[in-house]
Length: 475
Image 1: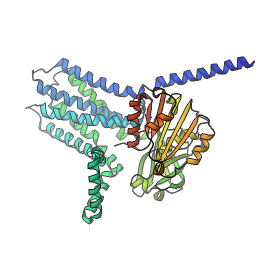
Image 2: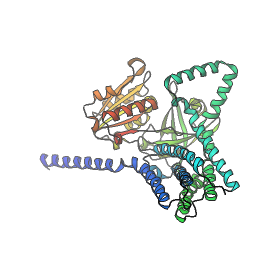
Image 3: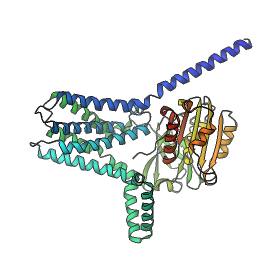
Image 4: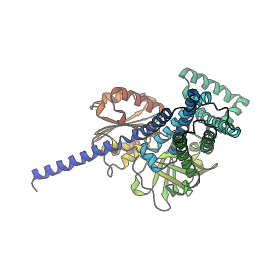
């Protein structure tokens, strides 16, 4: 083949790859909006149906209150479906992490709709046990919502108030009696596993409210309203029953053994696992549910896999953030069993444009480590600027620098925030030759940092569909 024909062939191959890459982005990216749009369509459709049928007795106040109750049941039922971990649900909402966020949003919105329901809905001929079920449902759901909010209530306060609270907590910690009460409160409300076990009762409270509606509603003389209500509530409760009874037999769980526990830096531990059977296949950047046995029994946490999928060994880099992760390098030892569920997530550089920015804060380097360690098998299309910030010497900095040096399209900048100050969006945009609409930005790190960068970059012109992050806040 002549040099000219060879060059033409290579150009055609490259163009085809670029076309497929572009088409893949167009197909995958709208998935972020499919799930929420579907929820919105269901909510509007239910409201339209009720308004078309209208109240049979002409009393609109009570009718609107009962409509609010039906919409609340719809949202709660969808929330039960979202937390079911069914594969198609993760696909519709673009990742299990986003699914968990929408689960929380719908549950809270459903709770808000109970206010007009309780205020306006009225039935003088209500059944006694129907009222009991209503109270069980409302107060039970309120308790779960409060328990979900309390561990993060400081973030809801303005900055000056947070400083006052921090001072009060410091005083309480030094006070013997108040310190004991503070420790007990944190133990009760801050334990994720305890919250998760209690949170599993959500379906029971939704069931109580659903049955209350069937027994006490005055609008269900209408066939369309009655059977629509039965359908929306029945689907959610059926999925809840499936999740609590047989779902465990269908979950993608893999048996592993702890091979090595390495102390990387203060508050940073890496655990390496070897498979006891067939190893889990995953795409770099995905995360898994890691079940480990500690002094309080089996506990589970979502962690990003920082290694390469080809060797069968799973590596998790874990930062000390709570009781379990703080004690993990003491409680987990080589030879102990581990169970891995997943993989989950859609944090993949293949979804980006030809101009990408990767921003990692502290332990947020984990998914990028997985990407970097697999560049030979999963190359990046286009140019990448990686910003890695850490307070103090950055773990893996030497390894990352060596990988970047071997790939011309990877440009690395490591920032020690303790001596160089914090990275800002202005610095990133000033260093980037591409215009904001052409950029894809991938972020992983502390929530405050990610929120600030996301908000600023959107204002600067980066398309929302090109901003990618992982969400690990499951409450």
